[in-house]
Image (cartoon, rainbow, N blue to C red):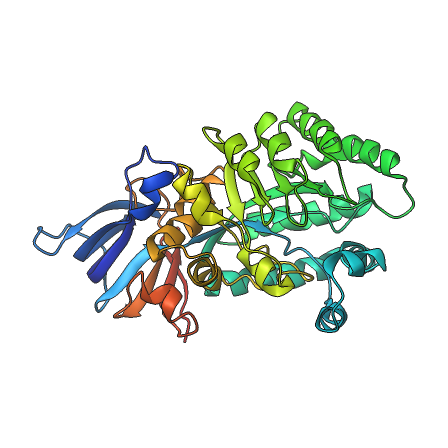
Length: 409
């Protein structure tokens, strides 16, 4: 089946197939064509060009009416397999309690673990799949899903089974991460729980692509993280790491030393972290939705780019510190609060987000041979308007593997 998309006002996010991430000054560039067409064949991008070209044959022609076509968003950090709500903690935050204070009272991650334990697996799937549908309707086509609200072998595997079920049934491209080391599970000492996480690794590897650790004061040390990442690598799980959310934790350096694909959060960073990441394969990934919701510092995105690196932006969609998977709002926060240009923010939520999931050879840009995962906007939209008019509906249709997913009215 061939579909020809015509009358495209702007085709944005064009990249060569050999480009897997954007870094430094490359973050300022977004490949575009105006007055364009795009040919999709059997779920893949086949070719594109301008209206002055001879149009290729197709089984179906779709008039984009001057709208923009851009890659779907790639959200490389979510915790969307969770049960129920933590809206009570929202009131605690309004009343001035910090993230750490809420956790110390048994809230936060442990609260989610209790809710998840008491939720049947099918119900957990239905709740989580509903969040995936919501994210797709807002333009996200690739999602990383982390465990970490189980905190014991049975419930961690329950989470990973649900994430795996989503990956098989959702039209989105899904990658799964084992985050058993999100907090110390109830009934364990710290040392016992680190042992337990490593013991879970063979079972986790049946479902997960990555292993992750929350390296933070009061949670897991760089030494814990190193042990867990190396254990994961023995079972074929590439490391990722939560680092420097609340303190300068040493997690960035640990992640780089152990070949982490991404180091995520980075609200608290110094020149030492920037230097550690320079020249590495690791993608600095910042989560401005969490900074917004918790009223904590935003990452030093521009400093990383000026140091020659790229960054990714992700939603951190979770029930306690970032209850939203709207990647256009993430892009807007990148511009408004982190002072990224629209072009830099666009690259951070598309190709670099895909890189942080290890899938930038398959999605994240308009490239022949990649998945036909793209958004068709309403007429008149530009890259600058996306973060500027951040609440105005902009999506006409979302296509995943060339199939129309839905219309956002």
